[in-house]
Length: 296
Image 1: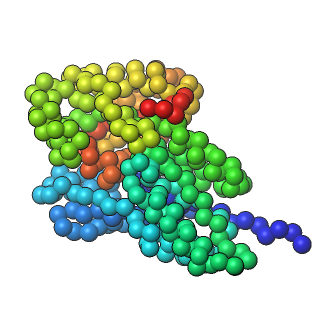
Image 2: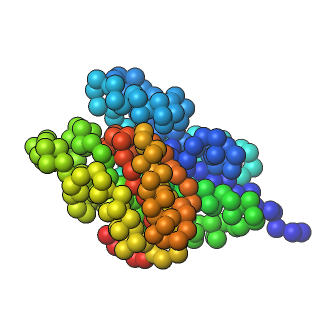
Image 3: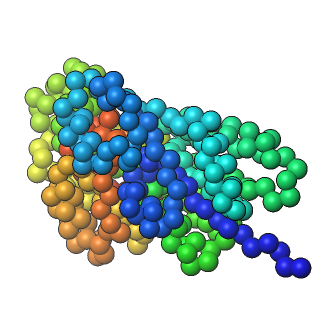
């Protein structure tokens, strides 16, 4: 008798910033993160689009707050997918260094296994730590879905997802310090001084560890500095993505400049979601690259 054919399902959370339409087209299951705006409990991607959130955050009286997914609601998803006949579920989460979702997914897996102990064909849950935010792992989930459609098996998919997450870096510059100041990432005094001097923080996030690479004076210098850093820090001839917010023209300028500097275009333009907006605002431009090493 031949072995039972595997049925693999990919799942991620909405911090990946994969759009609902794209996720549905590729068969990616999406868990929508909770966010509170002026006392209203909402779900990212379900209750608002990215573009709607750009307006919401600007008009909000209180600073929006995000929360992690609970073990209970994650286990509910495991149960629902298992009932569909899935043999292997690969769940790539927001980085464990920035959210408790990965740990909650692990707790949910333990509870799911306990509830189905002894079953002959219990679904196997594979967890992948996204190690970062937004497209740094969202892009890999999209590419993994394409690989799955071409016939890739569990081991290949997990290896790809984990390898990309270990090396991906997020780089961006907010055009205003209003939201950086409100989120507490920098002191109000430092943000005020930066605004007076026309300084913009050039930020990098690797393995959920954020740092300010430098302070850029003058908006005309933002794109050149981004290009210079991409050329210096990315693994040569690897895919890269352009990050955009409520001013896509900045992203188009960066995309054109990087295409000229690197000799090939970006894999795509990725709109930032609530997780990034709540910390730096929607007026931002940046990129995601594959770095040659894993350390910050």
